[in-house]
Image (cartoon, rainbow, N blue to C red; front, side):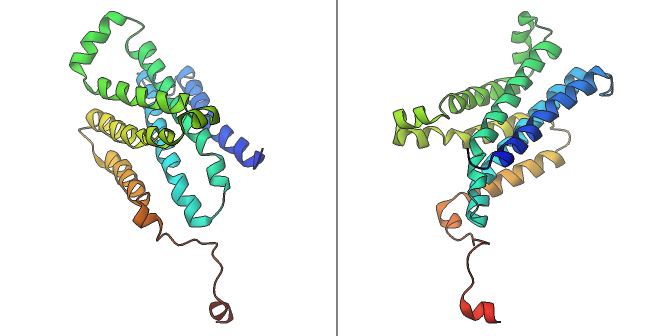
Length: 206
């Protein structure tokens, strides 16, 4: 396995936050409604991980370091794991495992449907993220994994619907997401300078 310490470091960094938040909820330091805070943080963490995953290709193009690509799949799977925890927290702390309330929640909060669609797209990406699926799907694999852009749009819409009263934080995420999408356009990515590119002799002498 290449870059083992880098991979382990990414794993620990991603894993530690849900554990910390669960401890804070158990220690009663998340306010009067720790369940809701925990659900919100897990959803926000999933969006952050999705943006980090989308930044991998531009970072690799910019630096030329293959270590970025080495953790891309892991980051994508962590994003999916956070979404699973987000949904589990919603089921436990918001619904209280009372499925009869789900229909009422869907009518009152249609952003849940948007989030569920994003989860289904992520599920398809997570299930087919292995090399076996790459070989089986061939050229269709890349087309399928363009669903990540749909996931980003659904995630931002889901968050926008929730934080309509305060758009400052959402605007930051949306701006970063838009920038990352622009950086992935072929005409743009071809023009990204590589920091590790060798300078011409004249530049080195200067």
